[in-house]
Length: 67
Image 1 (cartoon, rainbow, N blue to C red):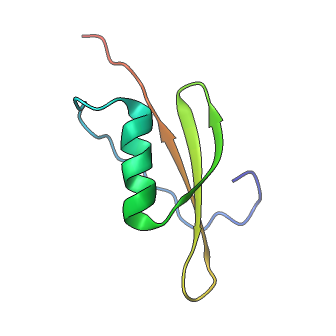
Image 2 (image 1 turned 45 degrees about the horizontal axis):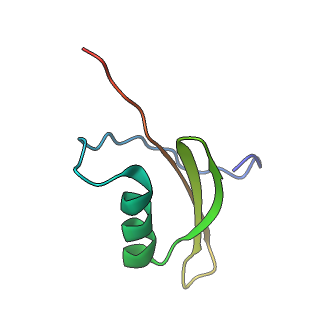
């Protein structure tokens, strides 16, 4: 994710769930065949490769919004 080959960037906020963060990440990995590269505190880097051998990198963060 730190290389200069990033071609697309997007952000999406998902409302809170009854599941804990790591359970949600595990579900996403199993559903979309992603691999966890790194877990640091409340952030997880995920990786996959398409059938065209294009690399996909995702960063998920768990944040708490206080209103």
